[in-house]
Amino acid sequence: LTPFAADPETRRTLTEVLLSDENPGVRTMMVDVLTGDMDTETIGVLQELIIRESNPYIRQKSLKALRQVNASVETF
Image (cartoon, rainbow, N blue to C red; front, side, top):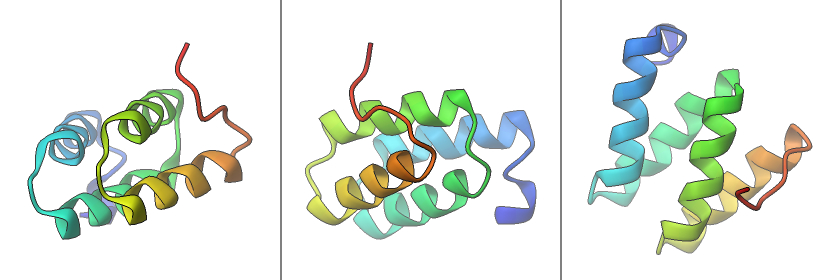
């Protein structure tokens, strides 16, 4: 999926999967794919994910990705 992650429609679908899929392995992969090319929308999604996510590993991956681009971990 990574080669197609820059396509806006694909990114929207990947974002939906990240926020709604029940499988933590799938959500982990979506964090990896989406953070390969961070944009402001992805930052917002990760900020939302940190609040909603019950899996500590996925929250940590999201926090790390936000810190790497000097983004706030809080939503505004």
